[in-house]
Length: 124
Image (tube, rainbow, N blue to C red; front, top):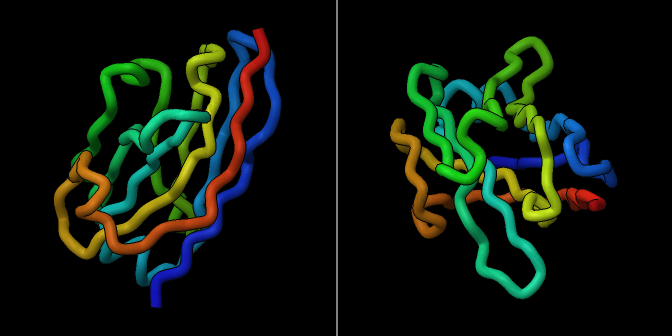
């Protein structure tokens, strides 16, 4: 069974940085495409970034490209999202997700496993 546990959320000022982590098993990290989605209050959940099992292919939403970096830390068994130059528009609950195919899909329904989410709040 795939288990995903997010951490690293918090409150930061505009322009600040945060690093989110998604803890999972080594098996999940090596065999599943993993992704970050986010959901702001009153809005639908949206794609943020994804990375394939081998870390060869990555995808980013246009709104975060150049500011966010997705990566895998195999020594810690985590998938991370480094976020820079944060704005209030980045405020949302961030979810970790996994799918058993080697393609960085941007589609929510393509992901079979989800974490509980971690709150990120950016103050203006």
